[in-house]
Image 1 (cartoon, rainbow, N blue to C red):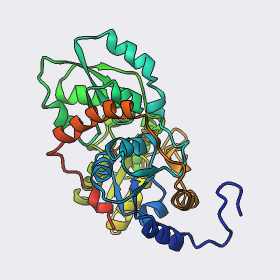
Image 2 (cartoon, rainbow, N blue to C red):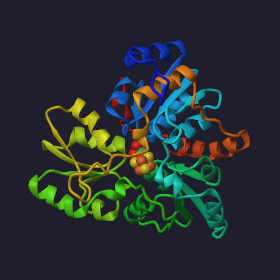
Image 3 (cartoon, rainbow, N blue to C red):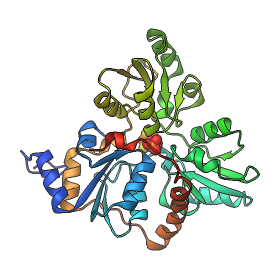
Image 4 (spheres, helix red, strand yellow):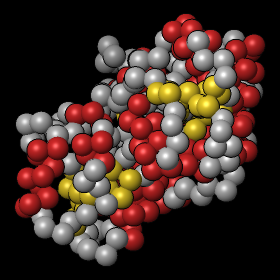
Length: 328
Ligand code: 13P
Ligand code: SF4
C-alpha cells in the first residue's frame, strides 16, 4: 500500500479505473490542463463551458471531475442528484482564493447600480452573489447581450475583465484577482522566443496580462486555442497558456510544432498549474473506488449559485466550443 492513496501495489490503474467507471456508472470529465494520462482516460475533455454542459446533461450516477474544485462544484450545482468526486480536494485556484465572498458582497453592496458578471473561476458563494457567470469561451457572447448603459462589476480575473473591456469598449469595474499561472509568463522571454521562430504565431489565454496579450495573434479560451492550432497556416505555434493543453495539439496535429511560452527564467515549469497537477491517476482510482473526496453543497446556497450558472448556459447557447477535439 502507499500512504497517500491506500492503493494496493501492482494495481493496473488503467484497467482498474475502467472497471470502476463501468461498475459505478461514472463519467470521467477532464480539463485540458490535466496530466496527459488523465486526459487520455477521460470520457470527455473540454474547457470550462463544455465541462459545465456535460455535467448538466450526463445520465451517469457519478461524475469523477478531473479539474479544480470550482469546476467540480459547478458540476454538483448543475447536477445535484449525482455523486461528484474530485480526486484531490486541495485542487483550488488562485482566482477563487483572490475573491473572499464577504469582501465580494461588500464590493457589490458599494455599487448597487451595477450587475455582477463573474468568471466561473470563483467559489460557489461568489456565484450565489453574482447575476451571471461567464467562461472565457462565452464571455464575449454574453457581454454582447447586456445593454451598453448597464453598469457592470467583473470579477475575479482583472486580466480577462481588462481584455474584454479593451476589446468590446465596455467600461467595467474590475476585481483585482489574477491567475498565478498565466501571470508568470515573461514578455522578455517571449520576445526572445519569437525572434528564434520568426513568423510563428502566438496563441494566448485571456487570463494572461496585457504584456503577453499584446503580442498574441490569437486570444481565446482553451477550446478556442485548440481550434486556432488546427487552423493556423504555419507549422509552429507558440502557446501562452498552461502547457498540458499541448497534449491535445500534439495528438491531433503531429505534423506541427507547439512551443510553450516561457516564464521569467526562460525555461521553468512555472506555467504548470500546481492545483490542476494535484490530480493523479492514483487519486482518480481511489476516488472512483471510495466515492470520496465528494463535493457537498448546502441546498440553499446551491440554488442561488445555480441561478447565475443557468443564466450563463442560456446566454451562451450560441457558443460552440471545440471541446470534442479531446473526446474519446
Ligand atoms: P477555459 O474555460 O478556457 O478552459 O479556462 C479554464 C481555466 O481558467 C483554467 O485556468
Ligand atoms: Fe486557476 Fe490559473 Fe490554475 Fe486555471 S490555471 S485553475 S485560473 S490557478
